[in-house]
Length: 392
Image: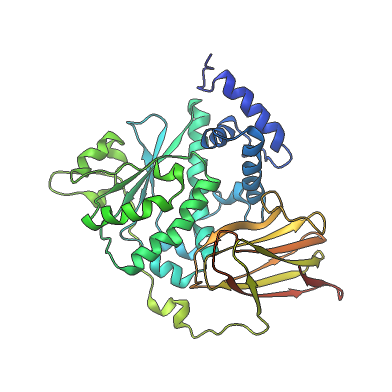
């Protein structure tokens, strides 16, 4: 039997079971049937307790200091946003309950972005847009009583092939795709690349196996008549005017992204590795913890770089031996895989609001052969004299 809002009785029972398992971390904002349904759909092969474990990791990120529930309510003012433009143009009008998002992949200076900002800052800027997409879906679901989706149109106009593109696609963009697949499960209906140059087909053949399974199965590649073929996915009114030519007129407006000046590159600033950096060698398949006992009011800052791909997180632990990062409280969203060698180090700080045990996490778990050489400096400006940091 199917309920009027499109959720079956069987799905309702599974949603109720999933909700019960994560209720301690589920916020009022995120607690909707459709949000939970997305996790069940995206992990249909897993038992519900295993889905709950993955969802709990996301919910911990939502409750971190990034405050994902309220992020979309803030102004879109991150410095990256002038270079990575807003893309929602309206509803599909062709596919039911689908919202169109235009990603200007070919015009966006992703290489410059990674040269100027750490992967953490890039993710912070992007999460704003992902949360905005989710908010649009939730609003449409509230209005229609049916599940909503994003059609992610990837305009590759102007894309040029070089080694930096290959490194970007197999590094930073792969990291972003994994983050989206991990945290924004089943929000994307299809990824639709348009205006694809001939070399991109060969690049896609190489890159496709590197993408998360759910991501690559959602890709719909259009041919040379893409301006006509895209009408199978969207009405004209939601398509951007930057595509206009003598035979095609689309009215939606999107700002074109600005390139990054090379003077802004981290490598151009002449900055040196900070003093008192700790060098940590993490063997292949292993991880490393740095434990701190902190008190309310302490200001913690960290500088992190690695010579190869690695994972990083900052957590609050309930007890000394807790090391299950999948369900630990996240101070900032954990990034379990980031590309390396690091172009722009992570350099951040945070004021502690609660006494307790805190842990930095450095992971080389996805490496089979090569050790990770991580450089990290942690400083604590403490309100008390006995704050301690202990490497574990």
